[in-house]
Image 1 (cartoon, rainbow, N blue to C red):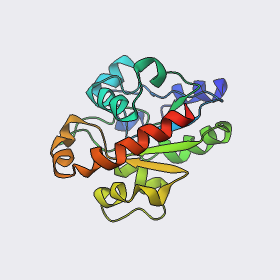
Image 2 (cartoon, rainbow, N blue to C red):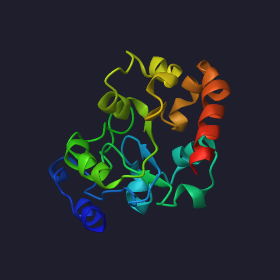
Image 3 (spheres, helix red, strand yellow):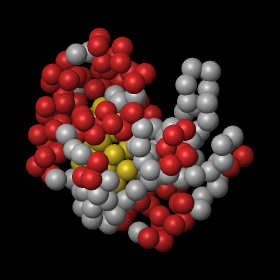
Length: 188
């Protein structure tokens, strides 16, 4: 695993497409029990090199019912984005994750992550990549989260930009989050 993580940290496949340069951000350990697959690091995480070290990460930890110490314990959580580097700014927010990372690195990572009990898929990029039966919308996929258990659990992105979605879909906090917290507590 050390060699693989070192190879990923040195990856520059996407360099010509990244205005802010490469800085692959991920975290994993051979004994990790829970994998979190999100989109790609944001600009803050790109600078710090610490996964989910921003407002989205604060909300995600709250959703998971864990503190920072537990969240950053590599033997509990493997943090593997769809794109390992910050993709840059687009017209309405960050650009989508680069498409090279997941097919290049995810299979190699999961070959070594033998103790994963559940994979948390955050956002439509991860859900569409990993789920053969994702619904037409993220909302429908998240609402029907039971269909993807026991291997996957699906979440919207915890970004503050999703506050409107969370208000419109209050069932998420009432139904999905209690299940998520209870399920993860058993694994942790």
